[in-house]
Image (cartoon, rainbow, N blue to C red; front, side, top):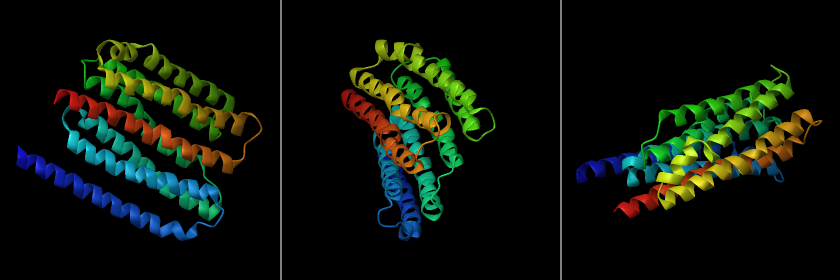
Length: 261
């Protein structure tokens, strides 16, 4: 068993080193393109490196803590991994063209947001027997929120229609995590540390995610918004919505593991 754990740890270290090497190559390839005073570019740089560091942290902790929490922490690493590479590319696009096309952010969201929602199911499944309905309701709600929103921003459907349908999807998610089955399982079966993490996660989805429909509203329904400001706000918001969200899960995993030791 000790030998197996040693191999797993070495494997995790190798993967983390490989990822860090790729991050360094990507960062050095376009850092010279940043100009003094380009605060949007700086915000892309900041979130790119923060996401890269978070990926390594979550990956290594998933191997250290392991057991029933390994999946949740690995998914957190996947979220920040996917987002980091999207941000490296979006930063390059920004400093080269001064634009940040909608498509890139939505590709990121279509991959990472469902994973974030599934985390609610995973942390509950780590401490209790939960139905698969929680998993599927959160996944479907996420798609209802994202797909019409993208279609509205891309001009495939009326922007107001896309906004309204997307808001309904978000409301459905909020109902599930605040008053639905997921909330009831957390309240009745989760230990204190998991309950605390669950509360922080659901408020992140409520408050942190509110920046996206606000940006949509001002950008497409209220006469437009400054692209530079929106990019800075979106970039900094992901410190909470992706990195801190994962840290909340890590806290639950770490505290629960210590309590079980």
